[in-house]
Length: 289
Ligand code: ADP
Ligand code: MG
Image: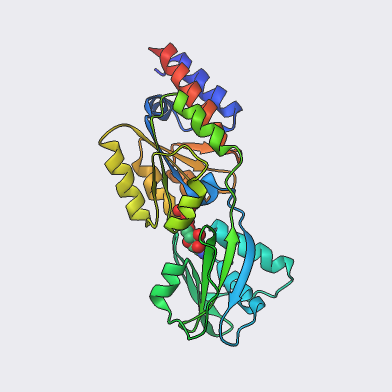
């Protein structure tokens, strides 16, 4: 039988919007010593705003946004959803993309208006597209960059800002007082962006440019030292959430795949609910023993 203290803990956590999927994850939560946090949509707000658009060749700035948004209608990535929202606000018509392939955390390839379009991070697009000659404006290092290629040639880039969740810095300090001795940032984004996001945070390390598999590897490596909680929002985080002692999904706006893979789902769009969640788990365990 499940001790009453654990049942009470689950229901108290639910009041804070922390859905814990049973007594086992609640107990595991009390033992966590290492926390690994995804960046986009987890530590950051995840609703990036377009700062600037740089177009190449004979493309207009609006073409870049239109192609990116048309294709990104097929993606649930927070950057993709932000691009679609921005294009709709500008009343750009967005044709339905066809022949879509999404590589989670990297980008999307597909056909828009009979042209092969690619949208995603700089590295992903550069790997598949050629860079036409022309002077490119230097891009701000700490911002999220999205590149767009048309028929295999780089057509432009969008620079976006995705601010840190305001509640994040205090929350990390609170978790440290609760015995979380090691906190890492793990992101598929570039190192420059990861560094700039982490500057005001109390972190023990930053791992950037990670594929979904590399996030899993990081979780498994850390688990050999102490119990690991992994927090993420994306399709690309789902395998790492499943690999952790406790996987936590940002449930309010995150991908369904991450909520399914997780042991704990934050039903409200606030990362700081981890604090009460862990405190309740620690108290419940104390009482149950
Ligand atoms: P994190 O791991 O921090 O959540 P991701 O790996 O999900 O970050 O995303 C990293 C970067 O990849 C984004 O900043 C963006 O440049 C790019 N990216 C990934 N998927 C898409 C997409 N569907 N559309 C546009 N850009 C994307
Ligand atoms: Mg993410």
